[in-house]
Every structure is written in structure tokens, then in C-alpha cells.
Length: 117
Image (cartoon, rainbow, N blue to C red; front, side, top):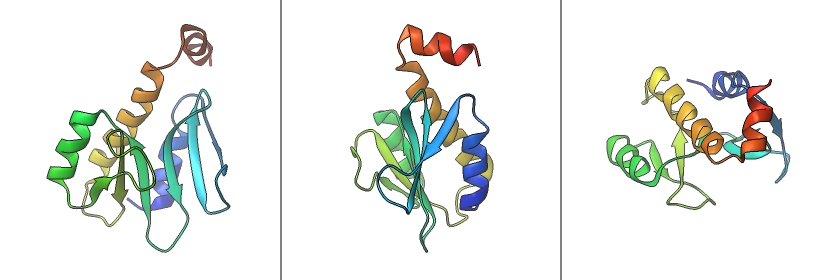
């Protein structure tokens, strides 16, 4: 999966917004204002995704393209190099997992607002 396809998939999730809060090169994807994906727009396509700590370790042991999150909490974030070594459906599942990690941490009010979209 290339970076543009990944970005489109992130945007297809319910209630997602995007911005560039850190610099002009790093696009951030949020749900209810909370980050679930970061995609740098540079020569080496990759994505940072939030992850359950145990599952993060499993992914790192399974795929050479998955490493601890670059400039992120290394327990909770993975950096995935978009080099084609991970099947698209599995990469989509990683995005889904990241989105769900954020959604499950929302307050009741935030969750109700998201459910109403």
C-alpha cells in the first residue's frame, strides 16, 4: 500500500480529521481530536500507528517493516515502513486497531458525539 492509499483509508474512518500540527511534512489523522496515525510526507513512506503494547511487540517480531514508534512512546506506537512487505489487508487492520485504540479511550460525551456522526 502506498502512502496516498493509506491516507485515503484513514480518512474513510468515521469522524476523522487531519492537520499538520508539528511541521509542514507530517500529516496527522485524528478522531475526536486525538491522534491515531501520523504520515510523514517524505522520500521514505511510513506511518506511525497507536497499538496495544502486547500486540505492538507481536507485530515487531512478525514484520521487519514494523519498529518502535519514531519520536513516539515506543510502548504504544509502531512505525511501519510502507515498502510493500505487509499485505494491504493487514495494514488496514493495523489502522483499524489504532483507530479503535483511540475510540475506546474516549469519554462518554466524545463517544456519543462520534456515534451521532
